Amino acid sequence: MNSTYTWWYNQKYDRVGHVFQNRFQSETVETEAYLLGVLRYIHNNPVKAKLVEIPEEYKWSSCPAYYGEKESFGLLTMSFVLDIFNSNREIAIKQFTDFMQKTNTDQFLDVSVKHRKSDEDLAQEVKELLNGQPIGILQSLDIEQRNKIIKQIKGIPGVTQRQIARVTGIHQSIIFKV
Image (cartoon, rainbow, N blue to C red; front, side):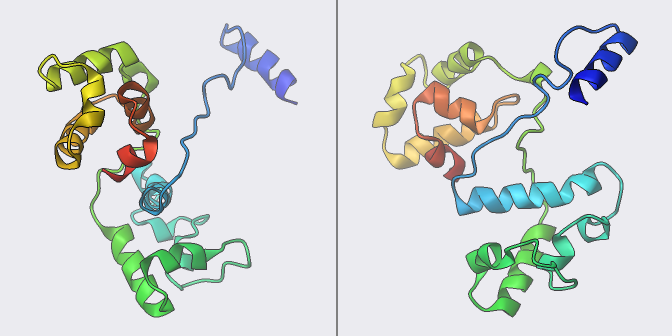
């Protein structure tokens, strides 16, 4: 089916090659904070796409199940996420709901490939933040100074957390936490 669709699509749009090439991306979820951010991001996609006003209005959303408003039919292991907030189910649901409704600037795979910085460009900007010192110096700074600079790097448009880890040599879990 994929090859037939690819042939049709390529003929119709005068293209060559894989239709789904570079279309799907992923990032490793290594921390609870990152998991919660990803979950909020996913639940808010229909809102962002202007399909609904709030996440729980979307027909296919699991958000109402997390809120305790509808049955999950065994498709979700909600306790894993809710236990991050609190072992008491009622308190956890309230805290999860509050978390979901917080204004945020979560960005995961939203950064357009066209606007993404190259590793070389990012390395140059990091060196400028370090006043010309080599990037490796980041690993020897005290945690407070290092985290301050990481926050500045994360604020650079067009970079991903994975890319920051790659360029700085600092483990992804540290980048995600900062």
